[in-house]
Length: 276
Image 1 (spheres, rainbow, N blue to C red):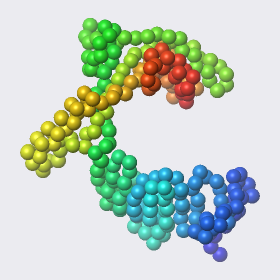
Image 2 (image 1 turned 90 degrees about the vertical axis):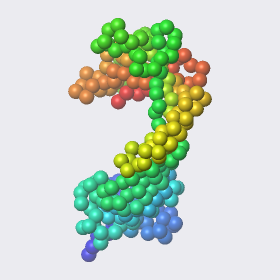
Image 3 (image 1 turned 180 degrees about the vertical axis):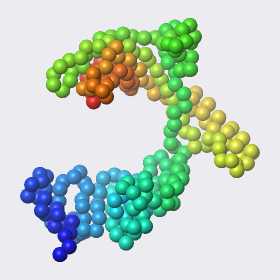
Image 4 (image 1 turned 120 degrees about the vertical axis):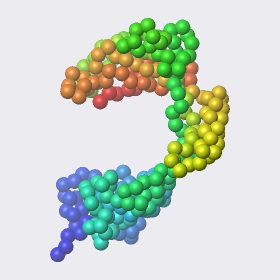
């Protein structure tokens, strides 16, 4: 007698916590009589059903087994296709296995054919443009002008703030270090109209796209709102992995809220940030 997924699930209910009786709608869709509460994902007789937010798409691919993926934004279904296992499931993960179909995400669309994938970026996708730091003279400068430790005398030093930083581990021990803080800001822009890099693109198409891209960048640089944050360097490793082969955190960045100073942001980070 062939063992079904439902048989295996029911067998596990005797020792696995979190199992409960399935609602009627789930049983009508082919779900087991009992299921494990796994944040909106359900193992069905025909595959798997997820009610978590996702992209929109339709594709055939393989991950352990061949399946048809139907994604509708509010949820998605993975329908097993055992007759395609030999043809599609070449490896143990989805990267090694071919995929055929499409998926539409918030900022781009993916077109898959075998192991080839073409990504089409939407106009509202934002990408990093440039970053500035606040110099010791109180002037905002591009990051390229920042002084480097291996080139003394070159560049401008950022305006720095040093303050004691105390980090409490999960076991109650406290790490005491000195945090050196610098203030920076960056801009992101729409770059969908960027210059084409395709070798067959005509020269006039490249020039036109480059002109549009330069115009959009200049407008957004002038009128766009910057992303303000602090760059933090610690005098010693911080976090639960400090002193281990993995090593703790020696530096990070943290977003500034409107009206905050770098000192206020660092104090808030001390209350909120966890280093694992």
